[in-house]
Length: 548
Image (cartoon, rainbow, N blue to C red; front, side, top):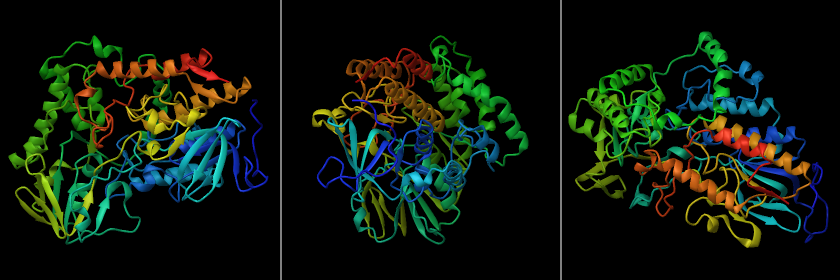
């Protein structure tokens, strides 16, 4: 079946026919209007394809629309947390801080959407409920909670890796009389904590950003810590013209490096690099600590593969925590132990550890003093009751697969994506799945996705998928599908790459360990040369894909 020309208007026909009068026809449906989804809309329109976007929120921005808790900001330097595809956009937009806050990042997403004329192509406040592949027409039938049906040849999932909140079922939570907030679904109206007793459950990245800000207003802040996390200082500050000039001079070199066969969180040098003396290591970590940001993980190529290097880095950070937090019991409770540094996403903070020196801040270590029940006016732990007026759940996300799992995908022979992923997600290159023709995922499991700069990883996926679709259309193919053998070989490679590192030694959300009942599969790709491999596969006629 040949691929049709771009569809420019609604279909017409009898009710009950394959295309009902109110069906929307398009070449491509893009689900999600975060940074990846916006670029997908732009890129596929460049190919001359008709595109429909669907977004659950009433505006663009993805995770930056929803995550607006106090202190929310990016942990990647702003100049790099930006689109790379448009030099004009880079020249027009000027970031105010080294690490931009949520409101500025959302403004950037809105500016990009308006600059490239993307809003008219997006259905906002619309959630996809189910999607089925029609083998008779080689199109996806996508249904939404508004009752609309979209029929498209290609379905592109840009739903993000951190978009579905992890709703932890605390016993008695429904009995709490005060307001309860989740950091991933923060209210849009102002929230005030002045004079209140506030509890925060969780000490991951969101909590580490939120806690210092809430502590400034709350009468009493109690932090309920499940697992301590490694965090390093951001050393945030304003950006000036010199910073932008330096960025412009080095950006092309950075982009070229992404295509290197050795580029990746764990490159070839990780397995043959020497172990420096401890004093040399600590001196380097000291300089990087004062510099700020997550560059400490790049101090040595074997930091994520060699325990003798990682142990020194981890103990260095623990020593810094002990030097900041004045109460030794609290300091030790805040020191992460039992897993290497960097194998959970490292946090970047502004005054997090020093916040525990405030007289109005207390830490409850749930490993020693677990929560027994939430009460109407507080939380009861094994040692007693903590009175609370407001409760904040900073419990993270159902990462990487959560948004995909809540949509009822049905492909050939009625197989659902949930069934196909019952023992863990399986993809080819993190972009496509065997048995699901014309369905593509941006930054999906099996790709670097959240390891590194997710905006640039998303751009790479969009460009690669666009090339794959163009290749199929040039061949007159109406179906593009990952081969099952190629998918199996790739997932074996993903597991082997992770197994050569220290990453599997932590119960992280990279493994799905934060979600009860979720299969324990290491989802990101941490090998080297991912883009290089993708380019080689494309040059070989998109090896591992079937074009029918």
